Length: 385
Image (cartoon, rainbow, N blue to C red; front, side, top):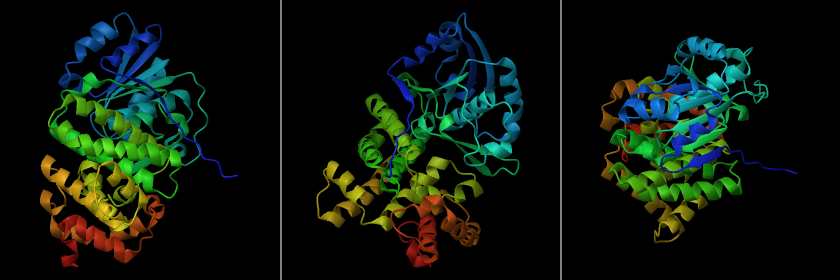
């Protein structure tokens, strides 16, 4: 029989829930933080002088950008020497990913970079150390996934994949969302939308994933604009929805927007900006798609089966316009010639990408090239073939 499973972490959520760290006052606590976040949230005094007062803790590192091998190597030695019982990672996806890597090397000190980048090579953890992830953005889903991204010595992104690195607990503290800049809310929010929609339509999505991810997509579409405008209730809903979307990709996979996001690395663009920007174009290509119709119906969109799906894509474009989310690479002044010179390479990469291979509709080189042109020029990209 073909069984499906649904992996997840444990959640603590609500305003002030960061105080849950006090439950571990008798443990050795290693901190992995983003100092910019700590400062922006005025969290320094509360964290160090209240929550951690009297605790045995060590501030292992400040992670303010995507982790790399060179960045993490000295911190691996530092955390192994400290020998913690608990690792607490506070920040966005990059910070939590770094926490996962340091957790792995704390649990399995004999590991090497070569073996942890190889699928199915990570041994079972001993359970000696736990990881608590405290996300301060609403988008990556890293607090609930079995993946971590690390750049190698050539600055290329490598993926660590193992159920062992799903955080032991995730704390969703709504008080940590008040000071988020609009750009972070936008890019993380559209990334979460891509996670929700793409995980639900994948060929390997279970009914459990589909139901949860559809709910997350509806909440994100309904709350993204108000969240960008600073509405706290909407930010709380976005935080939960983004985590549910993270559950979706953890138990399914992302899709074409993630499987065609190569320009992000080449032009040094935020991940969420790129995946969110590509999403409505890839959705348009995948119509007809029953999941889109279900989302449209729950949003109250009227029309026949196909009309509702097309209207859903247009609603996403309308939201992007209202929140000042770019809709094409030309709009953000990416050099046209440089981008076009990369397209053939991008098509070859996309043809082999699992996100595209597991999409609900087959792709070919012609389709991919047309989409890459649309990504640059916008809705009228086909005119520039």
